[in-house]
Image (cartoon, rainbow, N blue to C red):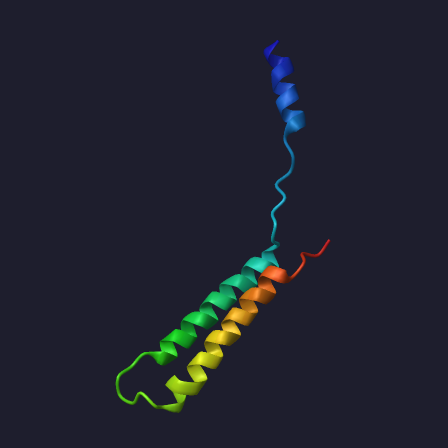
Length: 78
């Protein structure tokens, strides 16, 4: 009787289907790294109105968020 239960459990199990593919996770890690780089560009106390802090860093952060949205919306290959 226990063998019947074990065979029934084996039939119910399905393969691991993840929502995202490896490429999606790689893009998500890249987006987190880009956002981190953007915030790192904002760090410092020498000149608040520097081009790097006022213009470049926010653009890099927004680019990181765009890459993150792209990584979420991208469909995995069939």
